Length: 389
Image (cartoon, rainbow, N blue to C red; front, side):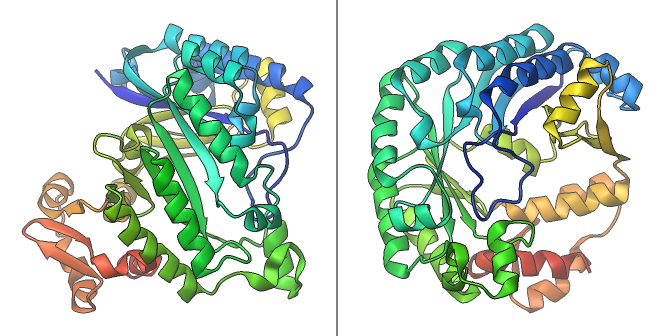
């Protein structure tokens, strides 16, 4: 029996954050229902769609069990709860479900008591909050709709509705962020005590408004006040210390959870377990192939309505690429890589690939386990680049 994760992409937002380069859009709510209908059709007929698009699901997928569902985006909490119910019903008709972790990404300002109660009735049991910061000045600079007060208003609503698994996202390196404001955000997060925390370093992409402003050398969107790379690394290291003190288990470079509250869905990505993505821009991995749907939501809906899956980036997973994924994704997890297992599974010696990194103090080995050095987590990307040379 194959256990799969189901990812549903909802590419709609109320506004576009200045740092965002995702394929999301601000559209009329009238476009929500046709999009949801297309997603439901893709779920219901996914085998036929896949066959016509050249996707070959392994035979083990015949009786696949969906044990995680994740609504990501975008801002899925913008949808009417009826829309979320429809998509979950479609999943349940096509996939058996056992103790599923069902996550909804939500922005704090979108949370209302009636909606939260409807989410729980639909089967949603985990909410991932795009908090980003507890500083109103930082939130305003990045174009976020919510403010600090919205976070404090939303959390009790979710708790009262029966949500016992809440995750907070914070971003280190927002324009105008200081050591003091970052520490304050971490302290307020700890006081609210979510079950899970994700910390991301700001990535300034030239495809975003903020990134374009940085390239121009301008000051709009706070571009001239972005903390330095060294400051961001310091912010991250501060988070590592404070979250540990607050009782969180650091299990992946960017993720912490209280005991038993690690993200079951995201662990599938890092452990190379199968997942199927539905919706515009959603990615899938069967174990033998990877593919993605076209990003444009209107084009996606049109294709599904015409009986065609707009699949792109379809590629077979070669043993060589699988091995690289094992090493890269394995090092992201603080439990590290079981070198012996990988060498047995792939029939190659991988330990020598770490010799240079070990000499440089970037990785550590304990028996068969190789992991990032604890003082190199903030510069993990540099380690990954060296490893893949």
